Image 1 (cartoon, rainbow over the protein chains, first blue to last red):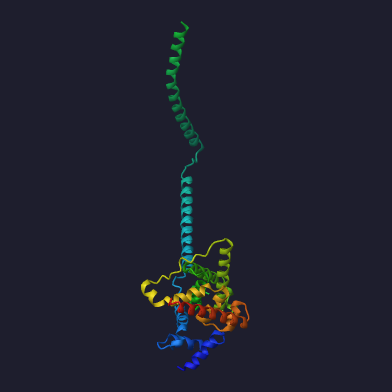
Image 2: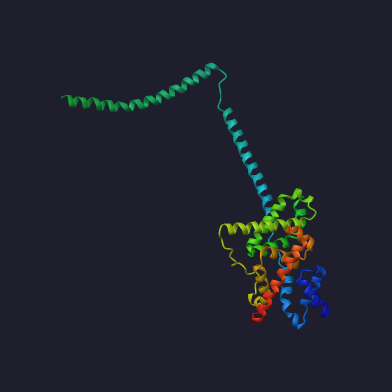
Amino acid sequence: MDLDRIENLVEKYFEGETTIAEEKELQTYFSSEDVAQHLEQYKAMFGYFSSAKEQKFEQKIPFLAKKRNLAWLSIAASVVVLLGMFTFYNYNMNQNQDLGTYDDHQKAFEETQKALNLLSKNVNVGVQSMEYVNEYQESKELIFKN
Amino acid sequence: MNQLEFVNLITPFKDKVFRLAKRLLVSTEEAEDATQEVLVKLWDKKQGLDKYNSVEAFAMTMTKNYCLDQLKSKRASNLQIVHNNFTDRTPLMQQQLEDSDSLTWVEKIINELPEQQRMIVQFRDIEQYEFEEIAKMMDMNETAVRVALSRARKTIIEFMTKTHSYGLR
């Protein structure tokens, strides 16, 4: 390459007057093996420029994928919750219906009476056991009176 | 616009966004965060992107503004910008030391430049944008861009010749 031309370009370069094409020419020249001795000092500068261009953004672009996964996850979660609520509700409804009512009033009355009798019988069992306490009370009174 | 179209749209310039962010913020991690941030913002704005005739220029301007804000808020909270993750993640330190010692010097000098000059060097000498595009992205006129660029290039070479003559190659 014509050395005069390179020298001329270098001068223009430092005045900020070179075009992109001329700057590329300079970069090619300075990345070659045979750079003139007195131009050696510029080599590192141009060398750095071409090496700096090689740096890449290596990370993936995670925000796209992440957002989508989250959306799917929330859809799945809400479906599960809804299904759960639905089955729970249905189950309870069936239970309520099975509680059983009597169509016959007489029978209903008898059944209620039976149930209340059972209750009072059990209460009486409790009362019976209290009679021991009464007995104790009486004997205590006997002792303390005399 | 679906995801695939979006990825295709940003692929040509996402490295440039990253490199500009790294030029301004210096640390690789912060530059990666900034790039993510810019890409997310672009994605959020994807409906309105058609009205920009150059999405790339728009993205670069956005990156510039985001990083400058970032630097400003750091300075405001009195935090020193720590350059401790300056090192590249590339292995083979030894080999790198031998090969690119003078290249590392160039990088250090560029990163010492005022932010405006740093960005212009990045746009012109590394990404090779035309002056017209740089002027738009920097919100300056072309002459001012040329002047700043010339000043930056002269500063770099001045330091490089100094380190040369001190034998610090």
